[in-house]
Length: 193
Image (cartoon, rainbow, N blue to C red; front, side):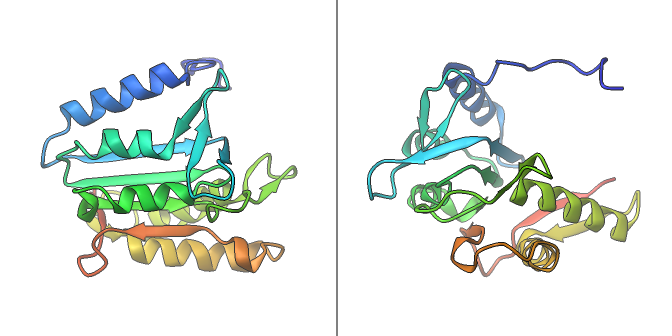
C-alpha cells in the first residue's frame, strides 16, 4: 500500500528542478555528497552533443544548464544517474566543469541514441537493473556494516548484471560513465546501513 507516500506528481517542472539544484548546491559543503537522479524523457539538438531532459511541463533542461549549476558545487562527491534518451550528451559538459574531479555520472545511453525501454518492466532498463543490482550489493554487504562502495567497481558490476540479464541490449547503445577521478576511486559511502 503506497497511499501514505507523499505525492510529487507534477512537481518536476523546470523551475522547480533548477531551484532545487541551486538550493542543494548552495547548502552542500566540502564534506557532503550530492546525488542527482533524472529518469524520464530526453532529446538531442540536431547532430550535436547538446542534449536535454524533458521536464513535467515539457520544457527542456539542457545539459549545459545542469553543468553550470553543478560547476558551483563545493561538495566532495557529485553523483549523477541519468536514464533518458540521449543522456550521454550530459557527460561532456560535466567533464568540462572546474570541479569535474568530484563527479561520477552514468547515462543510460550515448548522446546519439535512445534508451533501452521495456514495456514488461514498465521502466527504463538501466534504471530497473540498476536498482536490482544495487539492492544485491546492499544485501551482499549486509546490514549495519560500515563498508565503502567504490562506484566504478559497482558500475562494472551493474554492466555485467545488465548484460547477463537482458540479452537484447544493443552493443552500441550501452550505458556510459564519466569518472572525473579515475585513479582515485569514486566512493559512495561509507555505507552506513
